[in-house]
Image (cartoon, rainbow, N blue to C red):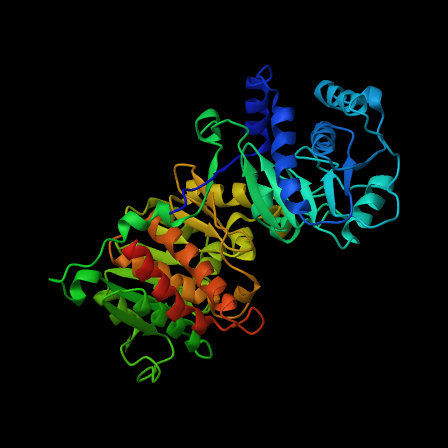
Length: 491
């Protein structure tokens, strides 16, 4: 089972680089050697030479090292560099000189031709503005190539902190991240530009060297699998909790039913669906018990409020009632919008002693914080952490690279999932999955980590089997998530 990988922001990375400033061999040599080994594998069988593009900073220094080491292995790299040698940082200047001393040549533009591999060493983690002029043209040229593209540390043009594509940005087939993962590789636009990501630790252990308050982790089953112990033979439905799904206003009954079906599939003992729109039965899932919202609240040991809830006075009354019950509580969708519109309830939320889970998408998070949507997306990690610490809740900020945060400041980024999840009802399924795990006794953190991971992994498995991503329906995720949950429990 894969262990979580460390994720570090720029400040923590700079501290590590400074701490190991005098290590031998230097970090730049280590980075270049790791990238050269990967480049050799990518060049296996290629008939054309590698193209290496070096920038004016330390990322360019890494590129010079890669070029020199590939040349030593018998390749004939074409290296393009348009910067001022006199302005290169010290280590990059040394790498440039070593490249020339090895017999390498420097070109000031990219020649037309066929390449076996393009290596992007233009800009790294410090970039904060769109590329312009020649560098923008070079990136556009890289993106037009038909060969594999390897980005060093981060694709040029991508903000390594938040994943925003700042303008024209390299679309790499492979990215090698040095020391640790960066948040921007995993969230927002990052996954569309990084391709296959590998990590070269450079002989360091970033999990112990970094400030733990600033270090995140990638989500893997290792974070929650121990909580999924095999079920005892001597158990019954009451052993696995009772989930109350509260929502389903007129015209939105499907949201509550999807959440209920997901909760059933992920193992909750009883599911009460408290519908604002009264239905007699779910004909596709008759195991669900359809009740009034008040009845469902009274019968349940865990509540999920929001799927199809609407914004009526009745919905607001139910939210107030749910906040007063000392039960594990998940708030999603319309429940979050009602919280944002009635901010006095946010204070009650922060006072709850029972576990609370919040599952906003970016627009809902913006409303909760009173921010613009753009402010949320340019700081997804910070947004999730603020929501978690302010409201004493475990939070997932949904989206590409969902960010999970807990009240003590720790944070995680999930790497499962695909565009098939961009369809109606998938958020309701996630809410039901998390509520089911919470009802079965998982701690709030483990329940949400497991639900988010399995939700995305189920979508990935669907696509791998030929279902989606286009047209993948939320209901198709549910049985696959059940299978994956049972596999995790058996591991």
